Amino acid sequence: MIILAINAPGSYLPSRLKMKEISDIIRAYRTALANGIQMALATVAKVEGSSYRRPGARMLVTEDGQLTGAISGGCLEGDALRKALLAIHQRKNRLITYDTSSEEGSEFAVQLGCDGIVHILFEYIDTDNPDNPLALLERLQHSRQETVVITLFSTKNKNEQRGTVLLTNGKSTLSSDMDLTALTDDIQLAKINRQSYIKKIQLNGVRTEALIQYIPPAVHLVIAGAGNDAQPLVEAADILGWETTVVDGRATHALPHRFPKATQVIVTTPGQVPAYVDIDPFTVFVLMTHNYHYDLGLLKLLIGTDTPYIGMLGPKTKLERTFRDLEQTGIIIDDLQRKRIYGPVGLHIGAETSEEIAISIISEIKAVMSGKTGGSLKFLKIRIHGEIPHIP
Image (spheres, rainbow, N blue to C red):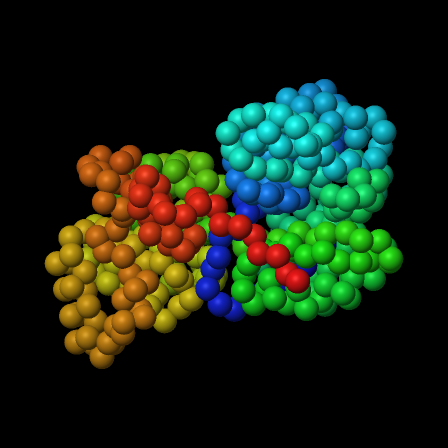
């Protein structure tokens, strides 16, 4: 596995590795480390056909049987526990192939109707190694940079599972035990396209495969408005592992104890929000102060930033009034800027209560950040999860 910190331009594509899952795994890793418990990391390295989880999904297994994360919908976890314990006992990386459509033709066959073949890499975690896979993933949490993670594995030679081999921040190499210049162009491709890939390569004379996985930072949701209706929105974002910031001009409302799941709660004017929030392509806003002039002032600042999503609570007439008032100050909203502004905010699911509206808003943001429309899967004509492209 390589972890490369990057700052790539372009549109956002969905990650196959969720930052919340990483955070949960790292917390479990630190607990096991503190208690001297051995562990192994299971990673979905490759999928042929359909599968509940896609390449890059991870699960931590400790020797006392604790599982954190997921590599399937629950159907593979039982056997994966046994394989992980074997990897811990042997202190060796292993690759196991599961066929979820057939009773034959793989090391572990189970007829689940998923019609896919899943290759799971089990990495023994040597806690004495400062560059073990989980130590590297832990470093990944310390910044909001985009990353590329490369996992090396072999479906042909099961005894050659390299796993984690390098960590770099794009400027200096922190650890390396092999020459990976053969992947330089592929890493660049993943950076530019914000897309994961799989490639067959030869490293040090050994034929292997590389999962070249693009990972964005967690979504940072900034909620302008500290009313009661913002509380379930913070709760819903927390479930997804998003960072949340609540801003409001009212000191009586913007109180940390009212939003215990928020990353920060700030009393400020619209003009000072950029001083408290670093706005990047993964920072989204919902304007719901119920104060027209506060929302107008903040929107005026946001339209020139990199935020891909600005949601505005209220009817369409309020949004159109906002555009007219901005035009009177000399600010003309062009078509590209209008596409980033969502008002009325949320998906059309019949939401009425604050909790329902929060689900509607969170769902719309998730759809926008994933490049999806938010429609019903019933009418989807293609696979839910697209295939990871293979690089020749």
